Structures are given as structure tokens and as C-alpha cells.
Image (cartoon, rainbow, N blue to C red; front, side, top):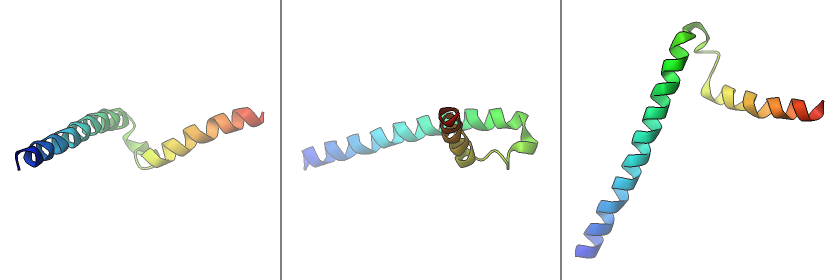
Length: 62
């Protein structure tokens, strides 16, 4: 029982750390978008990823 409790305690701690890190990163991203409030809806996180993925492809085709 003691071992199981120890393992259970370790698992959530690791997950929590990752969540906090992700939240901090998102907060910084939101702050940067605050400057371009009008483009907030247009510049979606997913859209940004696609654009970054597409840029190198276009460069390679050139």
C-alpha cells in the first residue's frame, strides 16, 4: 500500500508541473496578441502553425 501511494503522489506532481508551464507560455502568447487585438481572431494558434509549416514549403518550391 505504501508503494502505491508513493507512485500515485509522484504522477500528479509531474502532470501539474507541465500544466503550469503550458499556462505560463500561453499567458505570454496572449500578452503578445494583446498588442494586435484586432487581429486576435484572425491569428489563431492553429492558423499560425499552418502558416509556419507552409512558409518553408514555399521556399523549398522556389
